Structure formats: C-alpha cells, structure tokens
Length: 193
Image (cartoon, rainbow, N blue to C red; front, side):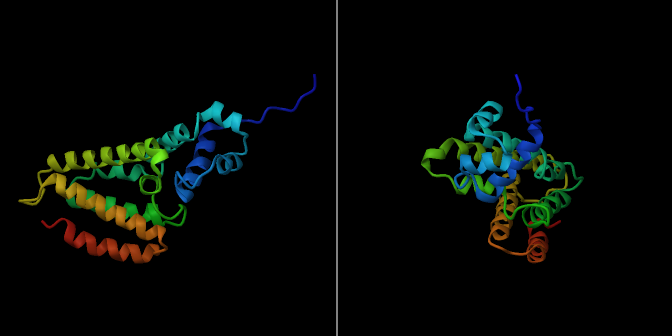
C-alpha cells in the first residue's frame, strides 16, 4: 500500500503559529480556517492535536505566558518595588510594540474582543490577567521598600492599568519610541521613594 509520508508535527511550533494568529486577530477575529491555514493542517488534525478553538486558545494563553509574556513573572524577582514596576512597564512596551511581535497584547485582545458566545475564552484570558495582578499585589505586600501609605492592591491595579494602556496604544499604531516616552513619564510617577 503506497501512501503519502505523514507530515511531521511539532506541537510547539504549531502553538507558536496559532499564538501569532490569535495575537494579531484576537480570539473572536480568528476563524478555524485562519488557524488551519496558519498551521498547515486540516480541521480534524487541529481537533485531534489541540481540541476545539477554545481549547487551543487556552493552550496559546499558556504558551504566551511562558514565552513572550514571561518577562512579567521574571519582573517579580527584581529586588526593589521600583525595579519591578520598571521591568513591567518597559517590558510591556517591548512586548506590545517590539520589532519581533504583533502590536498589542494577546490577553488584552482576548478580554476585549469576545462576544457573549465566547464568554469562556474571555474568562480564560481574564483569569490569567487576574492571576498576574494577584502575583504582583503579593510581591508588593512583601516589599520592605513600598512607599508609606501605598496600598499594594491599588498599586498592582495601577501598574496593570498602565501596561494595558500601553498595549492598547501599541495596537492603535503608537511606535515603540513613543511608548518608551510614555513609560518614562509613568515610571516617574508610579512609585515614589
């Protein structure tokens, strides 16, 4: 029986391709055809490898956090509050407006571009975002150098608001240089010693 040679399958490379599609187009803007075209596989192969679109999106969110978004978890290890905040804000600029990434943020797109029929995908993105904010709050709660009178939860929300704003501005076409100027101003006011 002669048959075609099976296509080699690299799940990590396929997830990276799916990540880029979701990142560029958002969850709602990405069709199964977009995904199968980008991955070079048919729908049955996509379902067999990754499950449905929602399950693939959840895997992509994990891949994003461990890959391009890993700077956020790494920032929490910085020795001072100011350094944590700086790494997060500057990292957001590089992630969302850098030369090697699509503009904007995958999780911001995921939260804001889902209709009610995609509520579980939206909730998956929100859950990851809330977990990141909780980790940041906990880091601030443990900080010996948190400015007096600064509430760790409020500061964590403020930092996330700034980084989300950077992502939105990057998606709207602001340049990396413009966003680094915004970051510099934000950093002068976010944490005062």
